[in-house]
Image 1 (cartoon, one colour):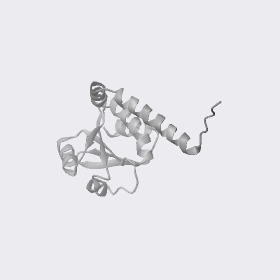
Image 2: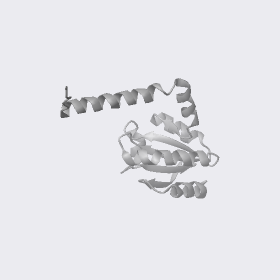
Image 3: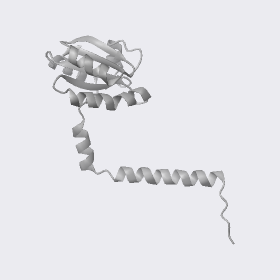
Length: 149
């Protein structure tokens, strides 16, 4: 009778193969049409440059702007992101919400004197009027939007 002997290396290789297979199934299971639909549903827009930030601020009039300053590597930022997406959808008539990556836009981070992320800034009439650092309960963001609009 043949007995299969598995050592740690074989188990690790098999585990990596299974994870890779599962990941590839997830990626190939989502077609381009589905990706476009998901992107279209996003209520938060990304700003990719200081010039883009200036354009948004200069064209906002008296609309309340909310800027989520984050980094891809930041775990609290990843926790906050879906909550802010929900807040943005629920209050799209009261505020425009934007994401700004502080690693690729350090000039914006310096302008707001960001010392820690996530850092959410509320602006109106080209002035920062409120800021929240760290992950707070959803109500903190909703209350700020309602009071500052």
